[in-house]
Length: 299
Image (tube, rainbow, N blue to C red; front, side, top):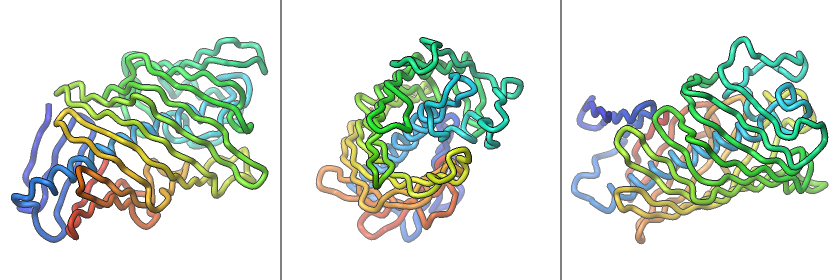
């Protein structure tokens, strides 16, 4: 159930089952500016969609060798579903402190394609505090640290808190001798609030380029990426938009949130700018429309 709290004339808190969006106007309210209000809603929908599929990227790319039997991921799930300490060094499966299971087909080492199913069952609270249910199913054509390898993820009744995630998520290692990178494509992405039926549809393409951490392959905590790309979206309120990353997003494995960068939202000739900050690890996003800034907090 959605709960709305008016804290002051300039701050509105909307609770949507596990995802709290706090929107406050830094200068003045939208008032009767319908176009600004719709653009603000489009910006929120885009930020929510981007964050949910970024989470999928981190889990699919972060599967650990202690589960699969060999190294096929890049450690991005540390602190999300796996503990932040280096499981690779300890060879621990961490099975005593987690609630998901991992199955592999085929189990024969170095044989690909290999399908890995992460099953969160009927409810599993991750290291990041999110409640996940259902399955993430990823098929790997090879280890994801090798150029040309691909990982295609689909979902079986997969939910994060009260949001159902659907679509196809594809990652390809596009690294060259001079750069470590992955392309990411979300096709027919859909996020549905299971409490009220509201949804966002989202199709996006991203390039994740590694900036830091490539010289310490067994320590994922120092890995850092920049993200570029664009997307299109729509929601159950009839709002459609496009978005383009105008300043690369900064993502550190040690943080659950995008730390910096900007995305331009375009809705029916109206623009908004999502600003993810100065690199600090926090859940704050600012959207600026017609020179007026509004704060968004993602939880």
